[in-house]
Image (cartoon, rainbow, N blue to C red):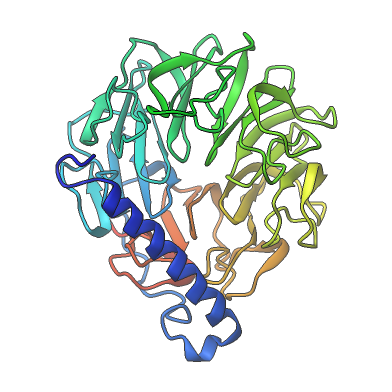
Length: 407
């Protein structure tokens, strides 16, 4: 299906582009001096004098978005599927573009090819690709500008996954919509025949009340007010933390009995943070993304090495990052295009400081890039930049933080 020029063909091209880019980067990891792009400028633009103060940032597969303190949303990077929300299917934009519609948002969330926003009144909007109903608009029509999620629910939080989206109501009830091939919606069964998802929000089975929710590539995780962690969906890499690789279609307790303050689903793995700031990860670990000082997978929560105390975590695809209570940023995992921001392209299996001595309030990990908001409201990104997802005004990769250009 294709609408307004966006459809499966362009999405397939993007997937192939990402795979080709990653394979090339892996080769360059061993031949860095021969690969000019992935060994390019480590800081290609100076810090501009800020004209806006960023309230939050979020990073998708090939794009990123930011929200100003005034509630204005901007997006940059790849816009092939309309995920920038500016009314066009931009090839890419290396600088922030305003999201159309004049809506004031309280939060944003991004994924592969779609973006969602939540107003201060709890009204949810989504835009971008919609082939599996991930926009929640009661159809499979892509949107180039924000479209209201159907159903009239009032949400307190939103989280966008690979091809699904989930939200928490103010009362903590979980709803999900979009692809359900692997049971990632948590409704008790998968959708194994067309249509492969749900086009409007459906209640997650089990009647649990959550305080946090995170949608991954084909799985979802949540944490209750008492700190109990649950996950559901795809589990081929042990990303549900259940001690096995059995897919689950409804919320299933994460093994180990740990009490988490937050949890994040990152595709083939997941991580959780205790109220004391101790980080645990589980699932696939081929790039060292679990931070366990090795590359062996884990089927249950395993402490991140190094003994650091984190205030927040972010993870996506093949790398993980955390911010300490003092604002120091650390990343670990895949780094062949500089997504860890340590000034190199060396893979790291333990937390490694982000270069530049910046003080961060939050980080957002994307596909092969990362963005961070400093404590004074400035925005920086680093890593892969072929689609302009660093927002630096160029398409040059950067192996350390580079300032996002002014809108």
